[in-house]
Image (tube, rainbow, N blue to C red; front, side):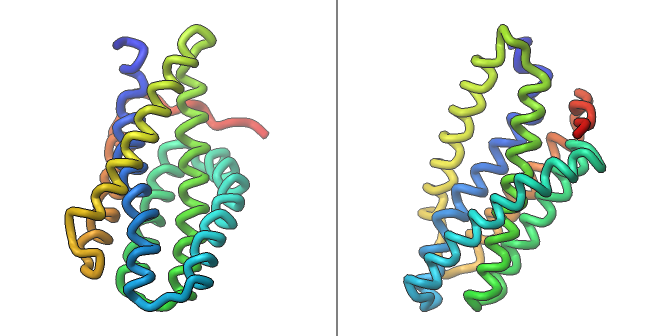
Length: 187
């Protein structure tokens, strides 16, 4: 258990974050169908997520170098909340594409933060254990998030609100931790 105490707040944040991600990844195509999006519209929605994700692998490390892990984590989760709310209040494929690209950018940046933090807090002796637990949490909470689509009507605002709440909640444990974040990386 002492192996996980220094990263417990990060793992709790990961749980909220990736549960919201699982919910949103299932909700958007289903809601898009209800909104009358074409198969092409939904395909572009998936593609721009990965375009944003690719950009996030560049933006994330630069942001971490500028302001550190915790501030970048908080900023990216705030942008995720904005992205979800934009999708909740607009019904235009174009707005959804831009928001989904932003989601990809933010999540890639967050994965960089999470995995660099875990790597910095692990040793050669416990790295496999730490990343195994992280992977189990990752896959488990994404699945739970997907199952959350069954708790409310997909055509309502509720599931967007739940995703936003979970994204916002993910910033709290990391922001409030007493455990120091890893130092800012050097290029």
